[in-house]
Image (cartoon, rainbow over all chains, first blue to last red; front, side, top):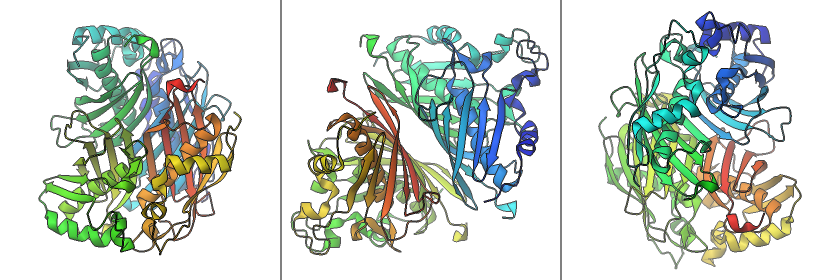
Length: 155
Length: 155
Length: 155
Length: 155
């Protein structure tokens, strides 16, 4: 596999395909959270991608831990980015199935999500995602997602 | 099983346990979305609960479909509510595993999530969630979640 | 949806598509288990199927409980049968993903697996399976499976 | 983590805890398959284990591919072995949840299952399993399993 998109390409595509990722920007005037981007693409490689969540108030639960839905979003977007980096911008790549295991309560600091493509077929892709806060041997969550690839994408 | 909490009890508990469910209220001045509540508990019963998402802009993706993370949140909170309605308010009931299947693209209208407890043990509960927009025979998504129940809850 | 196959049709097709379901027959001389069929199709209906496992020694674990792999097989074949009853005999309908939750230790007696199609698309079908021993409100296991449908099936 | 059991210890324990793994031995006279062991423990390490399936006729489907239930068994037992190698022989470590993705049709040759513990808690362990036929970058299946650890195990 060879990458079709760079980190900058993917980031640009995310802004149009997932505008709701950044609630602050959408609302237009969230002084507390400002324009700071919470979900960023760190790197893409052959069959891999790393996505980071730098949590804001909206991503936390009482006690200062990162919420489950925020980790789900991180895994889902990270896997999607890993696929798009390989096949190019395809808005209609959609999640069909995602299983997430929550392993340790995350601390209130950035979470890295290392994604690896397990299979990239013509119709389906399966990607795994390991989420950690610096030590991949002590992950906070793990996910595997299946994505449907539209038939008309010419591959 | 007999319910320990009413819909009003659960709604009140959600406000403290999941304040980030309502981003609008958290930001304090989201004129577009106002104070309108998007996630609401419709009913609780013996081993069941129904949760509703009335989607706002932040829950949508381009094309007007409800986003995957919004459906995940709906399923996760709905299953949690079904358990709490049985065992009483326990903030430390946490999701350990959730599998979600996305079945049909949701329309831009409310999604009902019918939750049913499959098992309520001393240490683990397993709940299934069927998400639909009026016709349960044509669901938009289905999830099963496992929740860890803290040992100190005296049951 | 309307059924394309009867119980007898499906049973006949299973014998060629899943010969290894019946280890005893395959070996040809298992005096202990004889020709008795352990996995049988009980019924098929619009979008549903019920499969039964009448456990033999090979399906048990120490203590007399039905083994996890035997329940997995029951769920997987049951979901497959539910799909085939709708679309007709298609050997190349294959499982792409299956999640199973083990809920209660089964007793050494028959397990019924009630399968329900959640989605039957052109390329993917998603089916849920509830396994119980007489009381569906106290299931022993629950599964959801995704199946890939070959493009050439003319639907 | 430090291993509590060697490969030989685990193999011995498997014979009593999972006798049905070897249908041939159970039947007592399967001339075709003989006493040959199909599922074997290849190695155990800190937080890891590798299990192998050398498929016999009963593990195949028409076309000569390894059946889904056989891969499920391989993953389930492999994950269980990885846990037991760490905590010692505990028959009552049971699977509560397993998600398996089937990625490529396996060929009729041995399948290696590389298992890695993602979390080993006091009450739950989560393990992932990558199944391949020599090239881990082209896996035939991937699974994640959750296992319940009995409270009385003194850890």
